[in-house]
Image 1 (cartoon, one colour):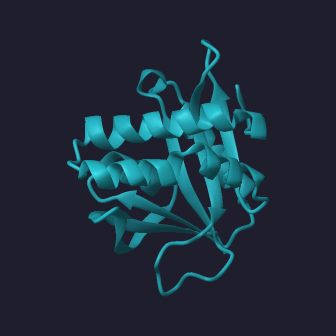
Image 2 (cartoon, one colour):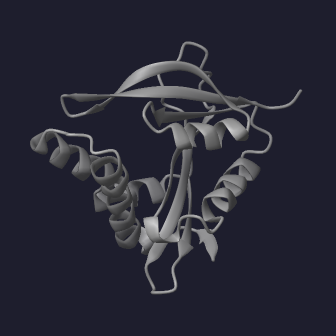
Length: 173
């Protein structure tokens, strides 16, 4: 079941965010982040305090998928865009994260979460997303939904820098 995340979800959501980040970037893509940088990044990005603050911020929206085993299986997180792009207009939305546990992939949950997020942003003139340059599958999924590459930037994980593609979706005029 997809539902809006609540403050009570913060511990489970923080655990899901950390687990899906690790599965994606450390296991699947095997990015060799320096351990000290990784530890700081994980704490600052996926720690309980960070997730609680995001859930309390009315400018952010998060939806979660309840799993059959009582834990969260997937989530999507939106908020004000913070990507470094010269055409960005303050207040435009960014799809920050859309992640699923590996064992529930292929069931349509990612598509449903993306549809929900884009539907929520229905009247937005533009929607932004940053995607790791090596994640061609995600770039393809977003491309199929009208996102196009409009730039690149370096995403910091401590002193490490991930090459990211900035994608943007324009509303039909």
